[in-house]
Length: 124
Image (cartoon, rainbow, N blue to C red):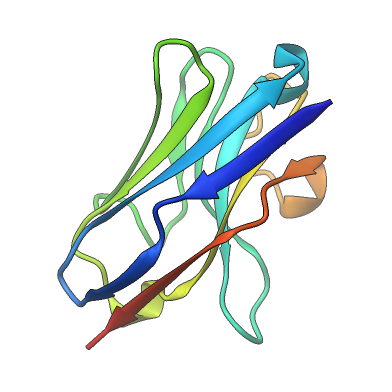
């Protein structure tokens, strides 16, 4: 069983930066591919960044060039560095994991494990 716990959300002004962290524990084979999703009120959950078992990375079309996904050497902590934040980045951000080795661009339904989410609010 895999557990995910996000941290690092908060409120910032437009143009600012935040770094989200996701502490992962449990069966490593159940979290071979991991991702960050976000969901704003009234909108569908959107894939922000994906990192697969070999370290290949894919970004959602709305954040490329501003966000960076990474993992620590142990693979137990997932990060999302968010720079040049915009008001439209305001959302609840979730860490997600799947046992699939490759999950780039996969929809939320493909991920079996989720964290509780951390709120990011960007003011103009």
